[in-house]
Image (cartoon, rainbow, N blue to C red; front, side, top):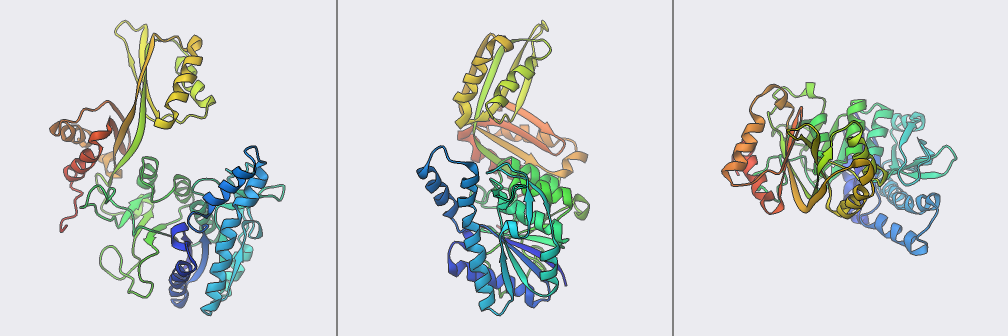
Length: 421
């Protein structure tokens, strides 16, 4: 017997019929003797609809009332799921975040989980009940409902799994696992059987949208094993793992120590819509970088790649960095506004870049990974504008028109193509 937390995203519960299908996955686990808790998102599109209603009511609304409205989407799904499970003969009860309780700070609209009291959930699960918990929400110290912001339901599921000491947390979504790259770009992309937390965190931050960054960070911190799997698979079919043997389908996201054979490169990611800004002739003096990036931080602009080049005379430097395309004008205005503190000669920039990254924990112990990337780009005539690296990642910025060619090329160069495709 295992203790499992299962989470269903919006597309998996978009209609009552899909909720009924998802409930069959839950029933399979219950019939196998497992203790199960469920975390649900709002039905697909419902949160956006609720946000639209709030904005229609008032552009200058109270964030506490925003949360009160937006949190209702998950409450509908949780109630419907509990009803469907009861109709299948499974004892179940829905829980709003405040009923668990999932305690958060008071940052309405972007709250962070402080703690979860698992006593009620633990009691229900031990007695054979299936608690169905609203994702994306909790309760502030004031007693008001809060929402967790982007990726909140995945984060809720991981937090609940950590609180109840679950053996694993199954994230049901519209894909059947984590792939070496986007299968829509590379038809020979492979589904990974296992991926380390650090790799998944890098891939999530670099454009892979299977899991949200916050949920992976929490899973890594609390050692919660995640399984990414499809809610659309047949719940009654034999459970076959990625290796073709009986087991849990999907991709296991786990500690690096659980992976015996580590790939040098596990995946290739693509992030589009990258704008590049270069400040030329910046006076090289203490505090200049703080002035540049402080001005951007004051405008809540997220900076990604950063490269600095010192001139031969040592008196000036060029600073290049990237921001989202949508933030380009805002970033330029912020830098121009800080010209007196930054003291640069002139600013250049462009939109429409693409960031390609290779990720793998095996890069720690293997030389030549970056040079392979650069050679592959050169062989295809693709110019590299920026390069940044970390212990398990190398990223380059290129023109968007070459993005998909670059992904396909690197996928082949690093031996990630599915052999029998």
